[in-house]
Length: 515
Ligand code: NG6
Ligand code: CA
Image (cartoon, rainbow, N blue to C red):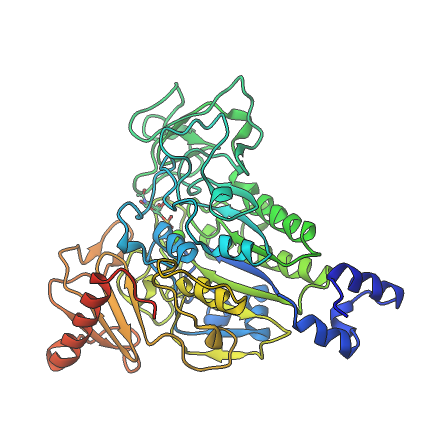
């Protein structure tokens, strides 16, 4: 007889057992593994391949993240779909390469929603499969349909594309409006002090970082000199909403608290939580208890803070006996950057730490550190721990989970999402056979080879100190023998170059790459 979670819990109580998952009799465990797992996706921001202990970092301790690696699968060739935030998140939720759609690059905080309500998304598919769906944290996919009034209902947004619950930062920590939106409303807004937002010209009489640097507790190194909120100047102008403005120092705790309550509220049914942390994006403003947690200044300290927040999620799952049947994913939206626009000592205090590990480039870059990111999957009921070098991408979650829950996809759905479930669950060493990476130039990886198409973009960004990977000539790297992309072997392998250039042309000229 099928037993739902509630009755299973009551049954365990009757037996006088509290930690059901750990010590459940075998007939109950077998029953558990036939159930839909919960899915928790922890999506860090700007966390690099080398930024955490389980990928080689030694100057910051990340015991909680490392624990997921030890108990799950640590992927070494896993990618975000793009080297910046908005396009990665667009692809993650829609299963479509963002470069196919105009208007999907890094968005201002007053952009309209770029995902069409009604289309199949990762959360809408899971919602139809019976999951409670929630997003907590950074959104950065636009809100409303143009000329948004922040003082009224904010829609369309997450609730219109498949989430039952949302507690979000509209864009990024460094972009106005600096307020949280819960479902369709700004949290804590006083109607007598309405919010106005503008990305073109100043609004109200709020001081800016440009005119009043003496008011700043953290100074910009590039950009970020418009409205000052909480002593930090941002991108964009806002006025009003004083009672609703966030305090950066409290953001990690606020978001983690909301993520934990979502898990608690939905513990008795399958749930999907997309927990998109603000850490370790700029401005890096850890809570005072993490200040000095590392010797690397704020960038290191917010890694420690991120790890603490991950620990809170792990503990919540443990407390609620949800560990065994929760598929937990930890990854990042793009690669690392050291100076991303604030003078926060990240450069001066970096020391021996290598945010990109052995890879070349970082955030914004066509070189592999742009998209190759930490990627861990843990599901004690079904997955044996280990590591995998399968080629996988976050864009694949939609097709993979659709397959897992027997949801069929229409031809136009998730056009670039592959079912890589066997790789995700550690049952197969093979993931995708190819992947298009997106930064300035497009690249394509197939097997050991990576081709970066010729492009007119700059080779180097001095402000962020990033090798962008663009070049006027074709680039070809053998990632197996040259993971650092040091030797362009295009001229020695013209056939390979031609083959990969043709593959890229084919993918680009057809509306989908999914089989
Ligand atoms: C850049 C910002 C950077 C960051 C990035 C988006 C400046 C000078 N730089 O334009 O600080 O906000 O956009 O980051 O303004 S992302 O992770 O959301 O893609
Ligand atoms: Ca990012």
